[in-house]
Structures are given as structure tokens and as C-alpha cells.
Picture (cartoon, rainbow over the protein chains, first blue to last red):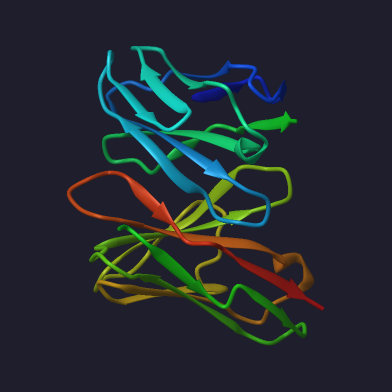
Length: 109
Length: 115
């Protein structure tokens, strides 16, 4: 059973069309939830770390939120350069990062 | 801040040869570094965790004699793929953790092609 599930698997948006990506998790004792962006052929680029339910973080057009069961990555008025795969990962005490399978976002102009 | 580099970015080698990949944390000291492997259109698969000055911890199914990891300093970890074969061709990515935070910062990756 997957401990981290991301949805949708793929998302196509028009430029300016806001949307949200979901990351649900079933781990207990969460010590952190992480969002990364990965472009093809490159390593993941760190976006946000969230530690507790209710926490929110923003960076440019991106906003990440966290509840006790899931996290959302909200993308406001996306641009074509926001096209990438967005990875969610969680960490429990004494474990390594557990990654979801990612959401591939395509933004067309 | 929190920049991680990898070298080389691309390597092509003949079957049976060994390849060394370097991972460096450029602006912080990383007591723990991680090595991942990623297949096309799949997520990252953790291979091993390396702590400075001690032996690496390998994930189940990863051959430690084939994938040699050395973490000799707080800013450098190396992964050596010994006697590489075509099935070892993949995208290898390292990451480093800046204590006491849990956040891992990733390198740009190394594409290995074994002919």
C-alpha cells in the first residue's frame, strides 16, 4: 500500500488557469512533508518543507498547505515555465524520504 | 544557499569498467548524503544513505559490492559503480541534508550509459 499518493498523475492547464495538486499520506509520526519540482533530465529542486497541520508556505505562484492527511500545492495563474513534474515526499522518525510518484504539469500558452 | 553539485553530469563507459560519481555540498556541511536512482518516468529510488566517516547503509536489494559509497568529508560523497553493465545504465542523483533540518537538497544528477 502506497504511503504517499499524488493526484492527478498528469495535469494540463492553460496559462493563467489556477489549479491544485494533491498529496495524501498515511504515515504516522510525520516529521516533515516536502515539495520538489523536477524538470526532465535534472535533479529535484526544493520548493517547500511543511512540518505541522495548518502550516502554509508561498513562493511566487506556488502555495503549499498541510493538513493531518494531505497537502495541496496550489498554482495561481500558471505560466508555461511552471511545466514540470512536482514531487511530494514525507519523512517519519528514523526513516528516509518516502516519495510519491509525482504529478506532471503541462501549462500551455 | 544549499547547493549540491554532481560530477560528471554525463558518462558513457564500456561494460566491465568502473565509474565514479562525485557529490558535493557547496555551501553547507552535510553529515548525511543520499544516493538515488531514477528510471524513466518513475520516481526516485533510494539506494543508500551515507554518513560522514562511517559505512553506508544500503537499501534492500542494492548490492553494496557493486555500488561503493564513500563519504570521506562533510562536503563530499562518492558513488563508484564497479564492473558496470548495461543494466546499470540509469540516472543517478545524490542529495545532502543540512542538519538539524530534515530537508534534502538534490544534485543535478548523473546520466550513466554503459555500452
